Image (cartoon, rainbow, N blue to C red):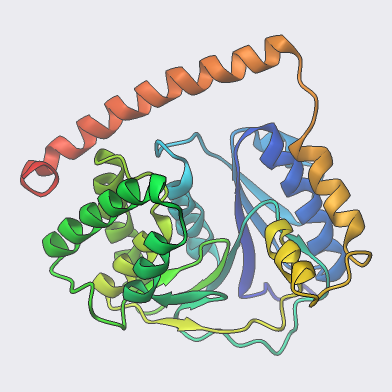
Length: 294
């Protein structure tokens, strides 16, 4: 008797050796704690994932300049295969079983989100004076973009979504419209030099598509993220000994020793990739000149 295919999957982006190494550990966590749940991976080297029976790996080359907005391609692939996809950063670890009674409502469910109005206040005030001018510039870009989209940034229903862990569930095709709007927003932000704006893009695209965004504590997903865990330890909310092994494994990947040749090759690839993707961005946006350039 054939086992029924689950309606939910995990999904992530793993470009480059560092993130592929993180994704290997993530896949092992999911297989250990939730066998039968697939991990969809978009990666530059899908052949490296062939030994993992719980991974569906698909070839992907970086499209966005900052790479952050490539997460939309992960969502697009995963939501085409499953009713619900849980996007998770490749360097997150899963520590326990995905609770089977978790129900995902149509739309977006975020582990962490807040109104864009509230986030903008924190975005400016969380840095020292040396960086405030750059962040004010980012918000000016965001304001112009919202006008072009006919969205009111003062609307407290429009959310900023923390992109390290969020869930998308199909809703009558609105999830497809959401992805199309995300692309438009991503191109505009990157064209104007605002590269790390995917949290804004998710919220704006959802608002434009009429896709609801909800907060949920997601108690049924027990995970480790290095900077999140450090905050918990600092506040006395977690025992550092409990997650020591995860810190060690994370740092072994993050601070792996590379030869001088490897470092030079990475810098050269980054340099060439930046200008290549910048050219592609310019060409892609010419098709809607009024929106992107006026």
